[in-house]
Length: 282
Image 1 (cartoon, rainbow, N blue to C red):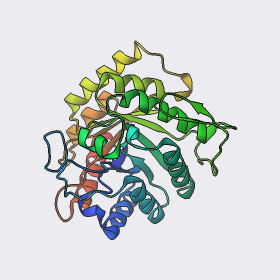
Image 2: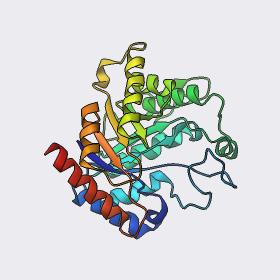
Image 3: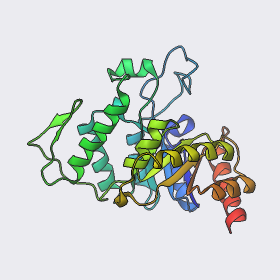
């Protein structure tokens, strides 16, 4: 089972030295990946739907992952997730291609549609049609990454007669679809190399995987995508051997653990996850 470390850009890791320490610690421990989350702005005062205080420090995830990538050589760099309809897809395609080149092909593109109305409003993004916007933006970005002559004509994005180099090292960039809704399941099946569930214990994970299985019976998965890789971030507590065994039984491929909320939280989370995986799976 692969192990990843979440929160690489949040809270204490918004300090540049602490971010590097966490990324290097994960790599040295044999973790496969580090992951960063995204909220550009947060409602003030905090609303029930908002996951964090508006004063909680959160670095831009692409910049944070670039910083982590410069300090490491092996660990993969994942967005968990980019709120895609809040981004300019042409600019984002350039940023991601650049990170993939600079990291020598270590980028994992986790995407989601978002949900915080105040954030969408502040950015000027389309909340009501965020699902179709996400699909178009992804298609447009893939044209810029892979097509000999990139062009796209959609309702929300259109371009032709342009090109952008360097292209990503990875062909293709791995797409990881986040979300716990029926549209997210369908998007994962039809467009994703993987699916990402956040804050899920084994029971909740089983429920979400049932949703993915149901979606796969309704929409067709392109053969070139291969098997859908399942990534899960467990609840914020030290990972146990029983937890790992339960996730493995469900078919989870990657556990992306959160650092714990204390001074040595990164080290404790890494040590607990490594010990639990070794004990459960050998």
